[in-house]
Image (cartoon, rainbow, N blue to C red):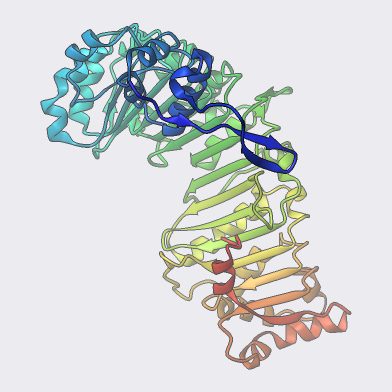
Length: 494
């Protein structure tokens, strides 16, 4: 067996000086521990579960090195609907099994027997990934998993049908003690509470599109979270705004709150009452990413959310806000002015289509959900439309609504208005005179407007507002916003 030749060079203070006066060394002469380091790097870089197969087919020695270090190399067997599972398990050593299938209904039905054969090895299955699988097929596989999988660390169940999959009460035997990542999408699981309470080592919790039939109350959800002291990311999202929390069961926030010490990401989709009941009971001081999506509602009760956000240290010095209007929602995002490795991000979105509802909801959320701390550091405010799903403006948004939307941003020095939106915001500012002109955006110094051919229209639209600020010795400079240049340079503003 011939191996590639390794050229060893002299490394000096100034770099590589040239070959050493030693004979060339083949990879076959390297000791086993060095080979293992190389193999470990190779497997990590490939990020493929079965890439180690390449190594064991090179020679007997490599095969021995690989199979004597199964944990170091994270050796696992990938079983799909196309894998001859019974034959495969007879060939390879006893290794953990990853069961993975994706959206191919014909292939799944033809190869269902292979998946069932893999799932029967209860003590070896470490990951189960059913992604975008028809509900009828998921039901077949779920029926097989009626007892605990003691080695299971990753579970993903995602249905691609319009109706939710209802898991049997006996799924997984109601226990997953080693589970570290759970992803359920449009899945109804009556005994989910029992399963979550058993998963005390959970690191990533993703429960998407919770159907009405799978509703879990805020108190029940929180009781599950309290056992997850290692939780780093949490996604909780409902498929619809129904059902809502029962107002008769709501109670005052507890005098002391549970702290999640390593939680860095929180994503929520639902009604504000649910989130209020949830965050009233805990703090997460290490959070650096929050994304909240509300269904449309008349009133957003957010008395607890500002407190919760203010207790996250990394949200205290965000420097800019982006308000984006879509055809189906409106969103406000608070972020640093420049993107760094420390991705701090706070987003609030309301799902609604009518323009007056978008403004009304945005005003409520900005005034009731954002704590004074982050708002006091915001120096830039961008207001624009999404490029790919532009809203349908109905000219029913009143000037007062725009002003109420701007009131919370008291520290903003630079205001950026897109070409489509400045004609809508400007009339609201035009009507401000005297002391009223000081109360809206009191720190404003520069106004950037996109798509201007000349400053005449702007002067006519907001001249009185700028003149009033000038009389109070608070001048405002109007400039052209080169929006496309900012996009091309990679600047983040929405």
